[in-house]
Amino acid sequence: LRLYKLSKEEWEIVRQLREVLKVFKDTTQFFSRGTPNLTTVIPTIDHIDQLLTTASLSHHKYDPAVHVACGLATRVLHKYYSLTDFFVLYRIAM
Image (cartoon, rainbow, N blue to C red; front, side, top):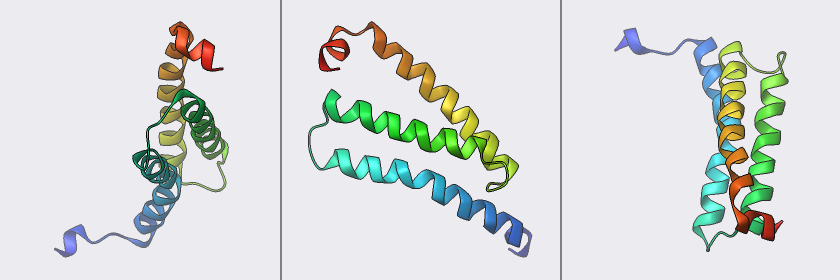
């Protein structure tokens, strides 16, 4: 089992990931309490986007692996977020 013991550097990456991923846990719990609608979902997506973008630009704060992962997550979020432009309900809600 010693082979799988995490080093101090790996524990630091875990801590950083936990910090970044907390927004997804909080969002899941928030929307699990009630029925989500566009007027609450869109600002939440914007908040997640802001956090991921900030993390992806924070070279000094995060390990390169976390920095790159946040950048990739931002790209995926933008990909799906851009699809909302095609929905009439989105336009009405905004």
